[in-house]
Image (cartoon, rainbow, N blue to C red; front, side, top):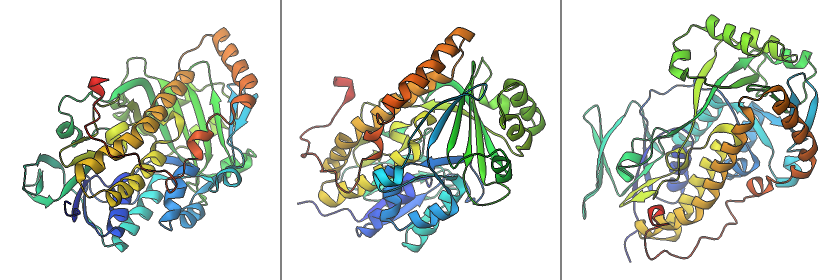
Length: 413
């Protein structure tokens, strides 16, 4: 039997990369993580980790600290543009699924993950942008970086996000990230604004005739312990154009777009200090996630738009199941194929769900918006448990599929 791989090169130090490195290190595999950007402790926006993702963090002992530094989300509440309640979902998550949903700043999550990686003797390198990969038979796989340096290993994991450089080596003709036509504007505001408005420990999500606005608590800090975000149709203006504007102009744009929306939305917009603008992207199903000794995980393999709140949690699942696959199978190629066979159906189902949800945040006429709101109000009680298949997934209990005798190739499907 082939000797178990001993050294992994991981490209990307977001969420999936460092978590995979920690778990592989626990399995006795030397891990080196390379990140294109400088190390930062303050970048990013807000996000939510659902119970399925929190289970992975609990396995690493990170859940209690992140719950303390974030905010437990007790429900997701829907509203019309005028503020009329439309329904509520995702109640009693901790009781139902063993872990809560937790909202927090991405920077808090990243700091906790990187700290755990360092304490687990994972080697991390920043400002290492991938240039090319050599994967030759009977030779170590080699990652070359734009600064002229290189690294050798037994296999390489691409965890470098939606704009993955590794993806181009795994699938040279891979589809480009798909622009869903929606833009995201997000930032942090003082907790006191939500407290003064009597906001519950939930995520409030408002559907307008055009676009969407969400807000909720994300931590105990008075100054930036709440987050809010706006989703809007692009109308031919890309994210880069908005990012070129100064903060005052961005705030003015949001004030105009959400004029007349219910309180505390106007007050939240007025209090935003730093507005982050992003395009809303996902990645169409790739023909394969691996090639030779290279494998894609997380957004590099199956980037999802944020409308299902699952991007981070699915990436965490990937990291855990990859480590399990490599511990169960010595042959790298078979381990990679087993991982993909298990993970692909679930990941692609989440991507499709997120894209459908995004369609509720586009343009509606007055009649169309009224019909949508009525449907949300009527159907929510019956569909509240329709997402249980996402949250009750337990990475520890899943049985690995039988070994695959040949590569799974979507092009042949």
